[in-house]
Length: 353
Ligand SMILES: NC(=O)C1=CN([C@@H]2O[C@H](COP(=O)(O)OP(=O)(O)OC[C@H]3O[C@@H](n4cnc5c(N)ncnc54)[C@H](OP(=O)(O)O)[C@@H]3O)[C@@H](O)[C@H]2O)C=CC1
Ligand SMILES: O=C(CO)COP(=O)(O)O
Ligand SMILES: [Zn+2]
Image (cartoon, helix red, strand yellow):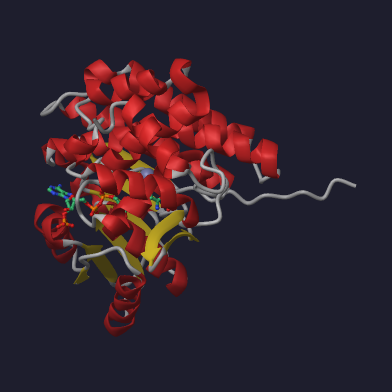
């Protein structure tokens, strides 16, 4: 008897385009959400977007509460839960980069409330996904949550954000190539749960982004449009898989370890991009796709070397040799690289000199 079942949760409304930040109140209305919202934001996104959105809510007779978070951590999730209870909030709105959106996502999941996702930067593919990503001591959790009820992605806001945030989002998408390679390897060697649809969507998203690389230029609002669609599509792949596997393999383990060894040195997307060059080399060797990944990254101005990341060579080697311990996720790193092998891959790919 065939008894398999699945439950794929996706947002009900996805609103993307010029000036749509003015439509957040309409989106809330369309979802029939009642009561007081709690805005979860971080310092810059508060000025850029949360304050103007709050003014729109006030004009509509709704008094939003606001909490500002500084780091992606379980403490921040606790703070938001307390703020929501104190404000008697009925739903949350995450407004900002990956940090604010992840925290809003996890707090709303705990509170069993809906949330909306309002990205202020096209810097990561967690905008729409059903996962949160949180460092916790020596490890990094991929936390199950629910996707937003709606996403409101204003391409004007996204295109006015610093250019490197957009290039980080592109690199997070380009890293899907190696994430999927790792997932297929883990399927073959460890029989992990695998979805051909999610893997294909994730790869196709990277493909379309790379094919449209010439449209991705600073100050061009069309770039924010192209990148936002890719970020959403990649997030949907994670929701279909009910795992971050389609978008997170060994290149993400490398980045998560850099976050521990060199906090705030570089953006998440930039780190995973550089990681992806090296893990592509590990998968395919000299003739594999690592050069294509490197060239795709440099064509959209994303870093391809440790120097460009602002991270020293020793830290790159330490991250490569230890990042397999971050979480129980089988990848091309297997049970870990030794130092000589790490030096070889980092040098051969030009990540270090
Ligand atoms: N859940 C998921 O599926 C995924 C989660 N992630 C997570 O997302 C995080 C990475 O996202 P990222 O966006 O890079 O991180 P942040 O949220 O830290 O944002 C990066 C920087 O951009 C700033 N910023 C945001 N919007 C603007 C703007 N409009 N103008 C100027 N500055 C702006 C932030 O300001 P400020 O310092 O004021 O906040 C911050 O300094 C990581 O924690 C990663 O693990 C990534 C991919 C997928
Ligand atoms: O960043 C992600 C996908 O781009 C997901 O993060 P995790 O590696 O924590 O699952
Ligand atoms: Zn990522």
